[in-house]
Length: 330
Image (cartoon, rainbow, N blue to C red; front, side, top):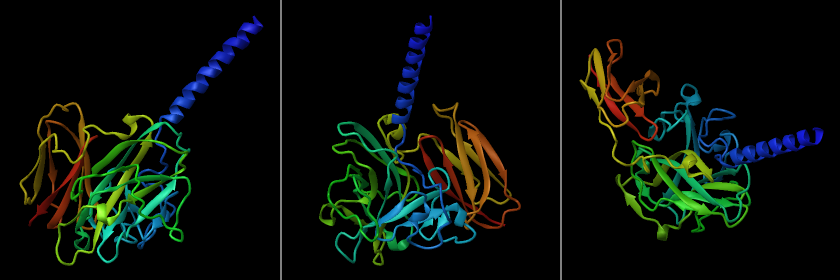
């Protein structure tokens, strides 16, 4: 009896070990993937190091967090020096340029250590969410923003560089400054890589560069959120495949301009059992209203006490996010 008990216990322990190994292996290998965990609130350029575990790997990449909304609003969320953009999730994101017109192959990179090294021969699924910044000086747009892996870290003293060997990158030029666009792909590890880098690792001569602004444009600059690396595609690949696809529902805001009342209507869709999240911000980035509504429903908001001006309505479900401008008149 005693021997059988030992055997059964050993089998259970083995099963638990295998279960824990599977769970640990099928996870996002990028810690602080949305840059929420901070060691301080950003107040100037080049403070990516305040996003716990991340560091600048070249240039002067920027960190934006809602904790700076009052103390340093130029580096807050959703309003900051680069324009207006709510985080895809949470309260933070980083920003970097993928091209600059004053020098060849000028780049900014960020990077960090992974939870565990990649296993050679294993397929990894990778995604990151990208938004083109609104600021007038950054109205170049490019393709090729993506991810590379390395066995050593880089720093601003020992910067990373263009090597034309990203693991995953966007072949399309990203110009969307409203919605978050997913860049995704798969990669078979050929080494036990320990670190991940983010940026445009492809040379200017192989990068498509578009000027979507004017003569004062200097940079192509992108905001980045929610980075994922996993062996299970469901961890990193959203459905639908890209947030840049047309919205699967019609959201109406009326009247607009509004005075005392504004109604948000969400037309019925196949996702009628799911909820839409929404928030309304003023031009200072302060959250005025937050809520949820079912598909096929509408909600009316009392705006009689709001000062006249422009407000931003941000909305999202599990696969799509967007924003609308709302004008209040008195």
